[in-house]
Image (tube, rainbow, N blue to C red; front, top):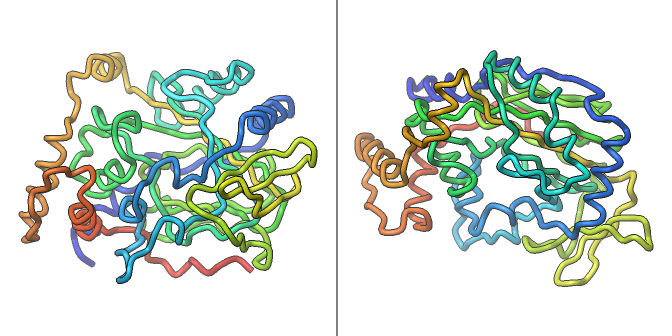
Length: 348
């Protein structure tokens, strides 16, 4: 096997084995989470949060290249929706403060990394009914000192992670990810032994079941939700929204204000993703706070270009590297590692 792929496979593994737990949220916390989600929609698709082009979306996974003739984000849209509950240590909904500033979760992730300090940095939810999810595994946004979700596109963070060129600036992260779902399929597949290793699957029951994990450095995916005959969503677009209809006591997807699909509450699959930043000691805390060891965009793109050229790839220096689609495609091709195990058969 190619030595470079072996090297990247060794890098793209979580720091510790994912830990499966149950019952981390109380019934009251779950009810308050649902209340916030119902009252504050409608919510955009997951891809609408992060991507403006198909190239940017594919750069986060092993999606390959855009087919001849072109594909739009509408063509690859899935009926999976997202909202942000807290970010940058700020809880956006005071009624969820005890969920965001969760002492048990902080203890879990410190133990997972075997470090002294942790702080919550992001809490979001994904919500869906039966739908076709993409079959490509992905990494969550990989965080580096100076290059973070707050100032950088997800595709760049993930290209940096897959390149293996910036590991000395990698920020320690861990997540507590919890599911509530009693329907068909909708499991979670992950690659703790690297993208070239064998996958594992978190099986049902998924009610208040959680994993403690480092999803930035472990390929994973949510499996298709619901029975196959229930998954089609005609009229779905990248810009579609999901909202709660109080009068119907159920959920509706709309495209440009028109309802294209409705779901009963018991069809919905809720995922709550809580993320924390970890520090080995006070020195690492200070390094993060004073930004004395931050990467810059200039350093990142210079290093990526130098590596591409060292590989013998003829890539022009882009004038706008964050948006140059040819450059993004070149990066995708150069750092194209993802799971290759024959696992991705749609659930029956």
